[in-house]
Image 1 (cartoon, rainbow, N blue to C red):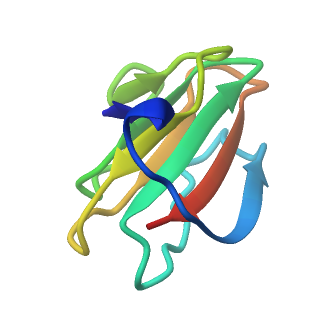
Image 2: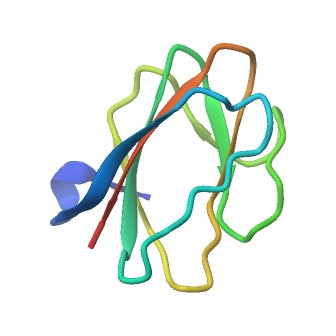
Length: 96
């Protein structure tokens, strides 16, 4: 993971706010995006990069209240998100 201050980030497309994380959320990545800027609000969020489904206890953790995190990826990366407990919100911005 790379923090925003360590890398250049050019936003692409609309800012996404996803609150329906009680089931696995798989965002649709623009074909030319090479990274995503993500942040969890209210409750922690888990995510995976390989297409497997995260659970409330499996996957990398986005801790609510932490600074936004840049996730660099390739065309083989499939991001999936889920809340650790009810009430989580994910904010996401694609970029390159």
